[in-house]
Length: 346
Ligand code: KG4
Ligand code: ZN
Image 1 (cartoon, helix red, strand yellow):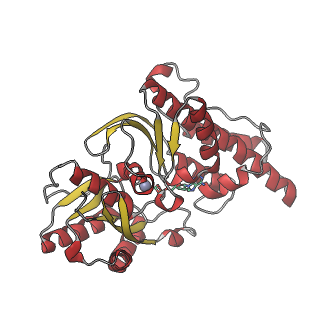
Image 2 (cartoon, helix red, strand yellow; image 1 turned 180 degrees about the horizontal axis):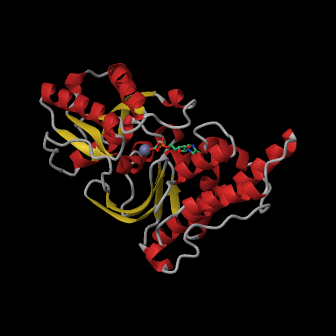
Image 3 (cartoon, helix red, strand yellow; image 1 turned 90 degrees about the vertical axis):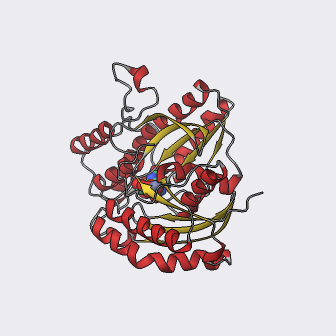
C-alpha cells in the first residue's frame, strides 16, 4: 500500500537528522548533534550550530541510507524542516534538500518541525487516531493542538505566552547552578525533592479572563517566583543541605509546570471529545509529566501516547513522518522557492 520512500531532513536547531520512512515504518536514520559545544556557553550559538550542520549533513545522510540498506535512487520524495528554528541552521537543511530534490528530480516538501514532533509517534505506535489532542513540549515550543488530520487539518488550541516548558526548566537549572541544558537535571533532582515542601504559583491561574487562556501556558512568572524564592532563601553552604534545598525547589517547580501541562491537555481532550492525547518534543521525556498526565488522562478515560525517548528530541524521522503523511494525503509538494521561516506558524 505504501510505496513511497520519504527522506526527511531536520536542521532547525542543533540536531542534524536524516531518516527514511515508508508509510509508518522507520527504515533507517542518522543523527548528529552540536549540543556538546554549547555547555560552556550555557546556550546555543547559532553560527556554531549552522557550521556543524554543514559538516554533519553528508555523514548523517550516509548513516541513514546505510541503516535502511537503501540508496538515493530508492527515495521517492524529500521533506525538510522549513521552520520554525534558527535561520542559519534551517538554511543548511533546506539547501541540502533542494540540491537533492533537484538533482534526483523528486518532489520536495518544506514542513513544520513542530507538527513533526507529533507525526513521529505514528512510527512507533501506528497511525494516530484522529481526531486527537497533540501536546508539543520542548525547548522551543509548548502547544496544544486539535489534530483532525495530521497532514491537512490542525487547529491550534493554545500555546505558551512566554517561555516554552523546556526553556523554563533550562532557565531554572541555570538559576540553581545545574549544567546546561538544565531540563533533565531539574527533572532528576525533582525526584528526590520533598513533596509540598514549597508551592510555586501556576501560570495564568490568576489571569482575569481565564476562559480566554483555557489552553494557554505561561511559565515566565514561575521562573521569577523561583528566583525570588532563592533571593529570600539562599542555598545553604553545607553540601547535603544544599542538595536537598535544590531538590525541593526543583520538585515544586516541576509540579507547577506539569500541573498546567497535564490539566490543560486533559481539558482539551474532554472539550473536543478526543480519546487520545499524543505528546511530543524533548520535554516529553520528563518523568513527572509522564506520571501526572497518564494519571489524569486515565481518570478522564483518555489514553496517552508518548513516542520513545529517542524520537522525542529533534530528529530526521519526525520530518520524514510528516512528509509521508503529506504524500499519503495527496498534498502538492512545496514550490521550490520556499525559504526558512524562523517563526513558521502551525
Ligand atoms: O525537542 P528538543 O530536543 O529541542 C527543541 O526543539 O527545543 O527539546 C529540548 C528541550 C530542552 O529544553 C531540554 O532541557 C528539555 O527538552 N528536556 C527536558 C527533559 N529532557 C529534555 N526537560 C525536562 N525534563 C526532562 N527529562
Ligand atoms: Zn523540536
